[in-house]
Image 1: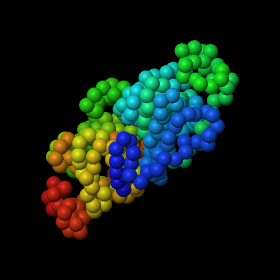
Image 2: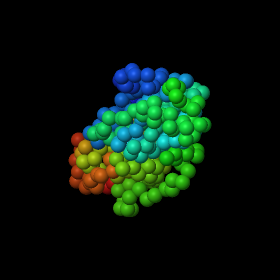
Image 3: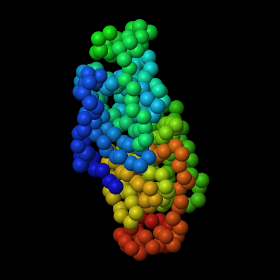
Image 4: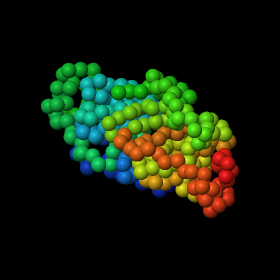
Length: 144
Length: 144
């Protein structure tokens, strides 16, 4: 089965879906499910400037390929700058967030089909993270 | 863990590996294992002009993202032209081959970690495939 690329990171027949139920834990995130396979799912996410995904952790791993823009990713208590074709491996139970600070960003994210639900960090956990590394504060819009 | 992209579809610290044991079933294929995760593996393959991967089938599925060049993919008895950012889903037991007819090609290929070994098609099976669709013959270098 061939899913044809159109342009500007859109694919033929693949509609935008809600990223998650709106709960204030994320901003400006678009989600596209390109392949829902039997083993794995292959999704494209786009975050417009100023936006960010939820800070979360879970048992299942992520393999991420950055493809659009220059962005940032939080991995546990460290921030990394990421650019197109950088690959990010998020092992089990690693805290992570994707951040579009300066421009729109886009990335592929691969997960196994049968997976646990993400666990969002609560305000206390986020506060501790920033206490341990004050450089992180600009990447958290949550009230701390 | 961040695997930095260098340029020309090469990543920092990721070395070329043999595609498979040399057996005449493929030509001009380079393999790079970018992430060997617990759930999934994320690989980059490059096939230089005139080359092709083995014709094979297996229980595990492939999710493929084309990223370099214009190439061809055989899916069961049909040939599709593929270009960068086209996504290809190869379900369980689907016959497939990737072909670099006119130029060098490159693609990401995602598989689950625990998977069966590919089964190569034998000459009889290939002959039948081409009998059913004579347009395929130019994509098979094997003696028919």
